[in-house]
Length: 234
Image 1 (tube, one colour):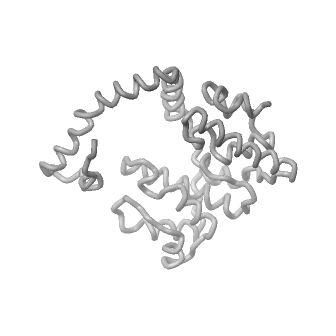
Image 2 (cartoon, one colour; image 1 turned 90 degrees about the vertical axis):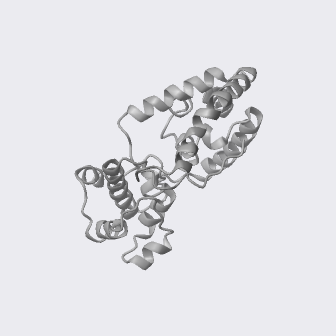
């Protein structure tokens, strides 16, 4: 089913809604039941239905657990200044997203936040060079970021992390070889089971496994162990 996305990013807070917006909003109700049946049959056929249920439960637990705001960022070979900046920026972004009730990625996406933390821009031009983009219609976001970085106005949470920086991982030559071989294995297993490799494990967690910082049981439970963990152990 081909659907027009013209109204996806329109102003959904404005009232009254445009008739086209209402029609667009109905699309989920019209098509999702049929899509559910198709996916349900496909997952059953591939014996992945239990995997899907496990993944839903995993995501519920993750959403309701105490969140680690910097879990998506790699600290490998990064300076303490970067670590301080990313703790600062992720805390600010979370607070901003909560205030206006939007996903954090609407404020700033991870990859852009990572560049800002790494480059530490001190003016608007430098901030723009980091690829600054936002879906939040607030004109002072840029100024808030620059103020945070220039004045280091740390929140209580960020201050607590400032004195406990993340461990910086540097793989040995032997570990680097294992890591490269593991990436090849991951691609092979992902192709075999027709699952996106990034859904199985991200590169940061793979490095954590190779370095011994985290365990396979912790990172690759359930269906992930079946797909990749067992072969990785071998």
